[in-house]
Each structure stands twice: as structure tokens, then as C-alpha cells.
Amino acid sequence: MNSMSNATVGSQRRMRALAFISFLAIASLLTTTVLHFTSSSSPLCPLPSPLPPHLFDALVHYALVSNASSSHMHSSDLLAISAVLRRRTPCNLLVFGLGPETLLWRALNHGGRTVFLDENEYFTSLFEQRHPGLEAYDVAYTTKVSEFSDLLSAVRAKVKGECRPVQNLLFSDCRLAINDLPNQLYDVAWDVIVIDGPSGYSPASPGRASAIFTAAVMARSQALRPTEVLVHDYERELERVFSDEFLCAENMVGTTGKLAHFVVQPNAATAAAADFCVNHSATSSPADIPP
Image (cartoon, rainbow, N blue to C red; front, side, top):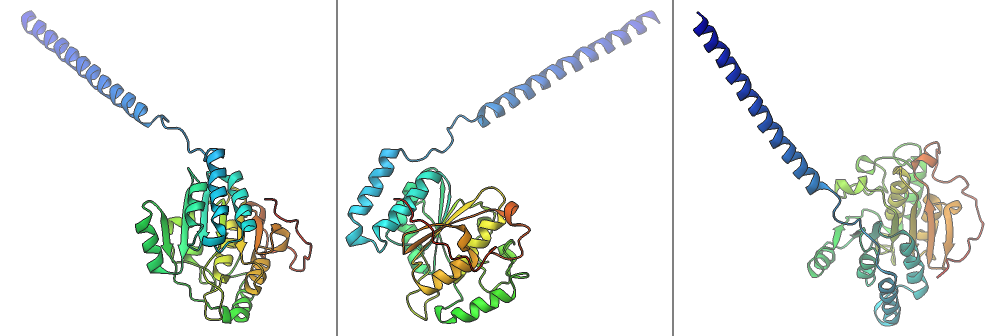
């Protein structure tokens, strides 16, 4: 009887010892795995940094030197946009329109995300093929410059509904809303938006009404920080009227004549607003944008 009892006790001890050893082995394995995971996910790579000042200045300088022969953008406009990027980069930069300055904007926003939208599907594809890594998407605009008055009236009639200032554009039925972009672009808090497209030089051109409206809603519908919106060709009637309607005179901080600079607050500051602008009749003249 005692021998059986001793055998049972010995067996139990061996089982406890085996269980303890197994526990140590599993704990060791888990510890090694956690340490490996922690080490591999630690911030060994530095955070994105802006372009060194001397390289930034060099890029702008050579862009200005070649400006007369290869760029449609006036030097003062190019300098104004560069000044904004110098302050905000690395940032989330959205540019309506592909053109001679495309590679400059992408380079100046070193370390940030730069996305381009263009009306020409072939041109967009060609740009991406020639410049690997460039992020660009084509947009099928449904508006025309000749529809100026009808577009403005239609949006004004629905500014408290489908065309409200703060909304999810992906599901918008507003006539001016661009809602066919890749879904993830609507979740980005854009720091700077440059509107240099689509074309608007003839009655049959798409015009920039949709681009301006969409930029205004994007700026207001994010909750993080102000968005700086720069509208090129502001001297043209459509660009001026739609900018004043949706980006608002009270948000304008500067102009070069052909370029208007607006700073739009996010939804925390505009959620209670029933309209885009506080004062549509504001006529104050903003100071020129410093170079």
C-alpha cells in the first residue's frame, strides 16, 4: 500500500515538474516573441523631415530661371505657393491639375504626401509612367464654364442639404461635389490644396467650380488643423466668384492678382455654421502675399 502511495506521489511530482518546465518554456518563447516584436516595431527610422533649406531654395531658383520658357505660372505665383510649402512641409498636399510645376511641388513636399488630380486620363497615366512613385488620379468632371450661373444657383438652393459645408463627399449628391476619387483620399486631412486645374479658358471647358467647392468641403470636414487653399487664375470671373462663395473673403489672407490664398478652419470651428461664409458681402482688400 505504501509502495503504491509512494509511486502515486512520485508520479504527481513528475507531472508537476513537467508542467513547470513546460510553463517556463512557453513563457520564454512568449518573452522572446514580444521582445522581437517590440524591437522590430520600435521607431528606428526617423520621422519624415522637410527638404533641407538649401535644396528647397535651389529648386525654387531653377524653377524661376526656367519659368519664362517652360511654365505657365507667373513667378510671383510660384513664389507664393513655395512660401506656403516652406512653412507647412512635410504635409498632405493635394493639387488639382498636372503641369510644368508638378515635379516642383512634389519635390518641395519632401517627406510628405503629394497627390495630383487631372481631367486628362491619358496625361495622368503618362505622368505616372514617366515619374515612378508620383501619385495621380484622373477626374471625370461633369461641369462646364458655360453653366456658371446655373451651377451657382443650384448649390445655393441646397447649401443646407446636399451641398452643405461639412459632409462626407464620398456620399454627396451635390452637383459640384467630386465623389468618385479613391475612397481613402476623403479621409486625409489636407494641409495645403492648390487649385490649378481643370481647364477653364473656354465656355466648353470643365472650369474649376467643382474643384473649389470640393476643396472647401474637404477643408471644413476634417477636424485636425486649418487648410491653406491656393486658387490660381483667380482673376477669371468663375474662379473669383466661386472662391468668394465657398472659400470666403473672410478667409482670404493674400493675393498676387492671379493667385488667391485662403486659410479655412476645420469643422470644430465651422460645425455650427449654416453657410460657407459668415459675410458674403465682405469687401476688404487682403494684403499681397509676401514672396
